[in-house]
Image 1 (cartoon, rainbow, N blue to C red):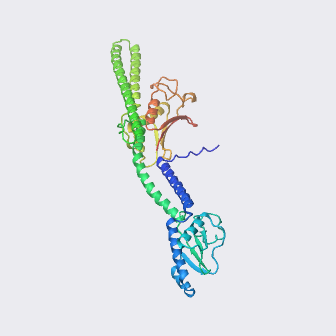
Image 2: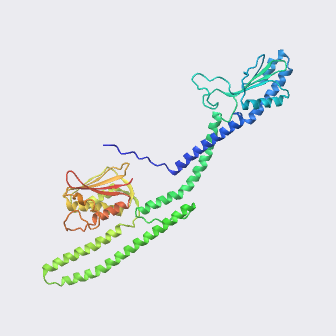
Image 3: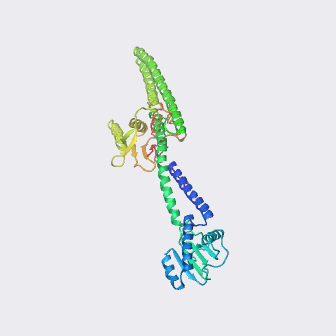
Length: 452
């Protein structure tokens, strides 16, 4: 037997919007990084100006310093990020320079004023360590420090070699992480507050629709929020009002029909009482009683479809125990199996009592032993089973017994086929399901499944 496909739970709108925002921030930072790198060659413009000023100062110092003092003076001018050395050979190879390196060299030429030979290398200060890939961008994690290596020719033929770095750059990993973190915190916080304000009326709308679907009559929705939400709320209020008027008109119509039927039924009952022959009189009285019960049961069915009692916190275990005890008091054999302790749930107590009570009465009508089982709540909700040892229902009738006036057998006993229809209506008011099945050991099982 193949396993059922796993259904993915859809993400909430807030989660989706925050994910889109995070992706947009990453893409925006990557685009800014690429443009900045292309425009400035990986060196911040302010850092470039500072480096050129410092090189110019050290170059002037090396020009006028005596050879025996040059080491001391350069030692005083350098720092961990800037190392200077005067040597007979340049510390930078004579290979071709990139566009950014040529631009940096041109800036040095302009500042020095003369035209000394300048060699510039912009990139990793050291060779990649073993195991690290060469050719990756300088901002890639684990790459060597990024910086400048410069060689300036002095007038006496020697070279001023400089090693400057690591330097701050647009692609620095720490700068990227800090930028993304700050942007995400600020933008995410503002978006979360905005979403909480925007989604509040949508949650109110969803809650009101669920309550209306369970048969309650919630107050009309306030027309607040965006235009689309106001239009949807107004449409829902109009729909609720129309359905409410329809239900009220139908209830008034049924009440009027009941009133009109009861008057002639009473008159017929009086006339039948005047019949002298007891045989026909008893048969006519039974027919009138059945007709009166049919009228009353039809009215109860119509009213139970739209009960007005509100949802409240209740104990399902206590409710089931009360229904079983009430029927045990009349001498009817019932068993109850329920988990120990209370089973809290929120629902409409009158509708639940009517649904479970109708199932118990139906089981007692057709079976000798009846058992009510209240299962512990699980992920799918709460299950209530009513089992009997009666004849069951033919399979071809199982799909139709919930229809009004359709019975599970061919008898014409003390029921008009409305009990199951009323029970189904009461269960559906809670968003649950009611199903019937024939048990393998004999009898019928009625199962109520209520949502968690």
